[in-house]
Length: 314
Image (cartoon, rainbow, N blue to C red; front, side, top):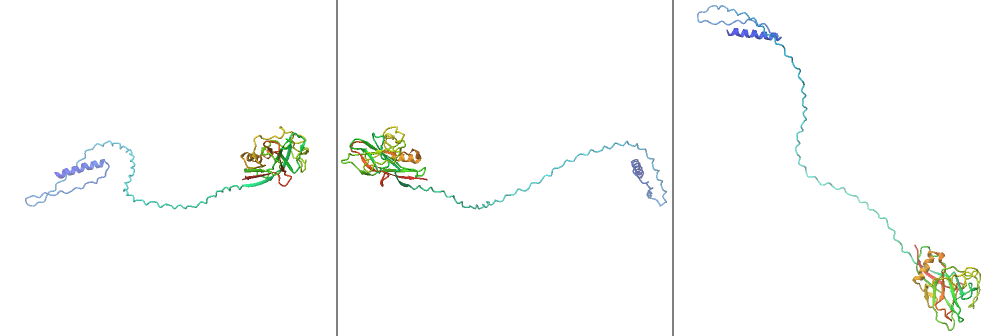
């Protein structure tokens, strides 16, 4: 009975598999084992195997359409970098300093200013003349003598003198100046006398007139001689008779030798700066009293008026 069920089941499965398109081999008859009887042995009558049951037609199932699987994009996994083990930093060695090569710089030598060396010059007068009060035509420009002061007759005389300073370099600084003249004769008895230098403000001439060794009264002027009334006898007059000059004296002395003063120094410096302004000085006896007259050597003689200056130039 059990075997019959098993056969039926196999048949059913065979049909199902055949319906599904699976080739199934035809089953072979399996001889059934005889059941032993307790009695005497007898030849067992073979039991016929029931015929294979007719398979019940299994309805063919409508195939379910297989859905095309939608490909699901795989998520791209970002590879995770495993954390690196934390390294304990080794203590850094201090950087070895790069040696600095110092190239010694040779300083440019600064030129030490050389102090200017003072220069001293003694200059002789280039022009001198005597003018007589009240005598517009009297002169002695070319004579060996000069007269300053008033004679016994009450007639004052004055001396004009000029020095050439063009040998002094332009821009020089005058630090000292002194003027001297030599007396060669005085009246007897002579009145006391003091002598002033005044800076002249106008040009004048020295002619060739010569009154000689006893020329206290002068002689007739030439056209280029200065006189009491004229700067040049042949033409231009003084603005003021007796000479155009600055009223304030540049220096005063008891004899006609004048040491350096601020005003005298200023006169010379002005002439160094502007040679065209150099008209020289006029020598006047302060009181112009009688018998104050003195006779001096002119530049035509060996000991005429001189100017000594000290200056520095760069």
